[in-house]
Amino acid sequence: MLTKPQGSLGRLEGLSVQLAGIARRCPPPRPARKAVIVFAGDHGVVAQGVSAYPQEVTPQMVLNFLRGGAAINVLARQAGAYVVVVDAGVAVPLAANDGLILGKIAPGTADMSAGPAMTRAEAEAAVALGLRVTQGLIDEGLDLLACGEMGIGNTTPATAIIAAVTGKPPIEVVGPGTGLPPGALAHKAAVVERALALNRPDPADGWDLLAKVGGFEIGAIAGAMLAAAAHAIPVVVDGFIATSAAIIAAALAPGARAYMIAGHRSAEPGHDAALAYLGLTPLLDLGMRLGEGTGAVLAMHLVEAAACLLGEMATFAEAGVSEKAD
Image: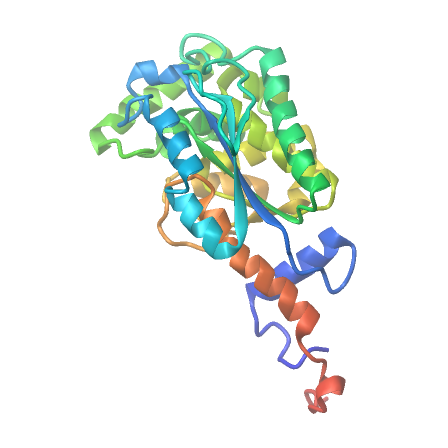
């Protein structure tokens, strides 16, 4: 009924329909209170030489987030979203700081190539952390969520999760992460293969998958996504690591997929397989692989635009415009 040929706004039309379905009203509300939660955690598997950066970068970047100097801070400000930073499992103690939520499950996961990354109780605590933090934001009026992450080495557990559920060999899913040279990718894939062979995670069991080859920040993101879905709030999914968390969330509650919007296609090679597994099509393809929630926050502009188009465009009758001839 709107003043345009049907389908002429392409993906924005389908997105507007999804938003109306999530909100259970048409037109859907324009998102007014947007947030990105950045969960930070470390990984024991970095001892296997799977990252180009040392583990000290994780707490250093947390401080950068809190000072407002990271890419996610810049893009969130531009999108009108606020940033919440959570310590889900950084390896070193972090001092109380305005804007930092202290939710450390443990000082980093165990080395998943030598045994399970965490216990079942720790996996449950990670998901509960994401639920709790997001519920607090929902109580304050949150209506559009993105989740980011910071954790040196976290593309390795994300690779393991995606390889486990898709059945693809790790060498086809593994990527450079923080910038590994091509020659190091085979080693990283071998570490993932060893972790999967040793732990044998059940791809249909989200708890087992998270505990055996996941990360604390990955579990917390999954919990955040579940909290948003439970309250009919759209979730813009970021890149490779966030999509591995979305896989955990969907394994725990399959209905959560309907609330997910893929913000962008990561340059990480395995991201396409992860998106296909979830049945999601990304809105943007900018060759990005930073994480932090950056791609998801950029896509918030399109989510808001889709809601506005459905809510603010005139119909043919209202505008006095002739409709298509029969």
